[in-house]
Amino acid sequence: MHPHPCEPAGIYIHIPFCKKKCRYCDFYSITDLSQAPSFIRALVQEMDMVCTAPFLFDTLYLGGGTPSLLEAEVIDSIIDAVRNRFKFLKAAEITVEVNPGAVTFGQLKTYHRAGANRINIGVQSFDQSNLDFLGRIHTADDAIYVLNASRKAGFENIGLDLIYGIPGQTVTSWLADLVKAVEFAPEHLACYMLTYEPKTPLSIARKKGRFNPLSKKIVFDLFETTLTFLTTNGYEQYEISNFSKKVIGSPGLRRSRHNQKYWSAVPYLGLGPSAHSFCSPKRQWNHRSVRRYINDLNNGVLPIMGQEVLTRSQRMIEAFCLGLRRKNGISFESFNQAFGVDFEQVIGDVIPDLEEKGLIKADQHHFALSQKGLLFLDSITEMFITHPAFSAGTRL
Image (cartoon, rainbow, N blue to C red; front, side, top):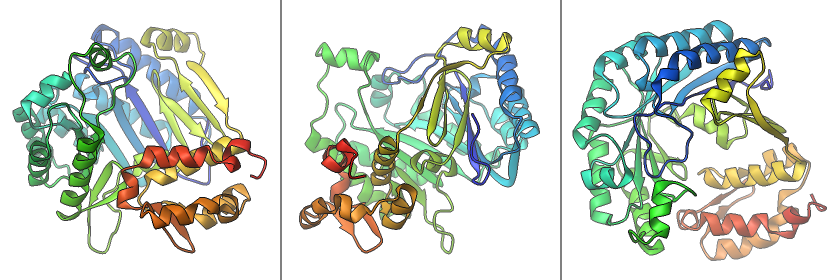
């Protein structure tokens, strides 16, 4: 599967190893590092099998799992292997995801020398009780160490992830996390609401009544606190969970270029077990098994578990849902050109009511959720995608 040659695409590599599975996480990972050498050989084989066409890329993201569990020289070799096989723009964004407690200054220095120019740190919280609840292996001191070490290693583009909505969390305790994060002046902050993914230990414990999740009212208060605090402290929100540091004269400079591809339906290539690839209208995904992944590639077969070709109606729904997540919303002109419809004629009947309630902002060119509307993203999205125009598909 290859991205369109006219638009720079992204590459995501899934490194599926973790010291321990976090209680809330449903990403694919294993703790058996003995499979790492075979995995690396298979990963390079997968690259060799999909790099034959001269397509252009401008982002590389190494995620997981915990990429930093591999030796720094291995990460170096992966970055080198990618650059030797795929055509990258000179100013490409190269991100390595790291977890506190599982990375050293020496590793960070090696990543930087290897060409990585962005580091993304899974801090999640500076409060030890929150870290314990989430099942994280690190301490607040570990997080502080990585933030300082990343700067010292030469990284000028640092992303920091936090989680809110943790049982027992209050506006005051969440604000303390935000204040601490901003002290380190990361170029990017992702603040994710805790979700209870099916079959995760946290979801199972919740069903057994072992803790009480926060009420929607408190979660909304935490979200509003996030928006107010970060926007008054030099950050701009560009997606419902993502904030980048404002740079005078260069708006959007510190946004995650790679993640924007997911929200904008730009092509991306996924390598590694469970990784997804997308090039409209086709999406495909690899096996969620390191052993199956390795075996397939050893036999000269791409490790594809499944694929789908999206219908026009499905593509419109996805574009709409992803557009609602972005601060700049949906461009009527872009939507109309992409799908050959008049957006306002098709679904404009519900816009006045939402405007009157203060849930959306609309002008002649764009439609976006207001700050109040972002609090009700799920219900507004559901209202639109069940609209007869989308559900029937005939008018589209």
